[in-house]
Amino acid sequence: MEKETRLLELSNFLKSKRAKLHPQMVGLPAGTRRRTPGLRREEVAQIAGVSTTWYTWLEQGRDIKVSGSVLDAVANALRLNKDEKQYLYALASGERAVGNASAINEAEKSLMTPSLNRILQELRHCPTIISDKYCRIVGWNKAAAMVFIDFDKIPEEDRNIIFLLFSRKEFKSLAVNWEHFVKGYLSIFRSYYGQYVADEWYKQFIEKMEQQFPEFKKLWDEEEVSSAPDVLIEFRHAKAGKMLFNLTSLQVQGASDLRCSVYTPVMNTDTELKLKNLLSKSDE
Picture 1 (cartoon, helix red, strand yellow):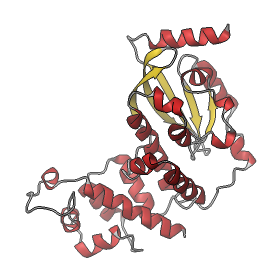
Picture 2: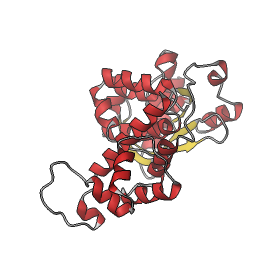
Picture 3: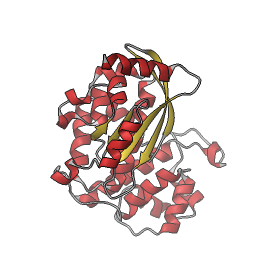
Picture 4: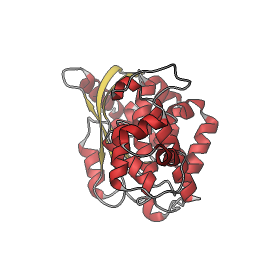
């Protein structure tokens, strides 16, 4: 089942990336009218220097042998970025796919270390969230609770950033460009999915999200991948008004697969002052 899931995702990923390319983008003539968007399979094969039959089998998700050099050629033909290439390699080789680890054991529940808690405290004026490979929120500071939502009031089983982005109206009303905001987290989530595609938890979670939220399926099918997007986010906070943050997502060193998402107030704006006022009023 793990191999079938991995190869199916490989097929979907290649089709999606091929559909986003046009002949002019890769130096090919536009030619006659196309029935479907994007390049044809034979065009990708031509650019990559492989046979059309081999590329077709790869895109169909067949269990065939692939070498690193050939995957490099396919990745270059599809104009993949660094994170997308890593995702392609993980799906094609299965080398980093981890077996079923769906159960939340006690070790995973205590991933927060004293040093991480200290970091959260020190980043007093930067809303910061610590999440795991499932995008479960395992730590946050007071600034994050003030800007986003009081995570203490969210049941632990629902404390997943992907689920909250689609299910809670607070997040939908907060981000001025909600779709852009969500895409950043979905791209991180997909980078994890490529590494742990064998984990049954992902399959169950994705199916649940697709059933509950049509918007999730639409954005998930875009196959965006990024291990650490660095973006500018504009919020419209119910109490503070307009706030601008730079989101920096950092992988925590070690074997725990934790991620630290830091929202830094944009310089030369009144965002930090507004945040300080929110924190001050909450202490009264």
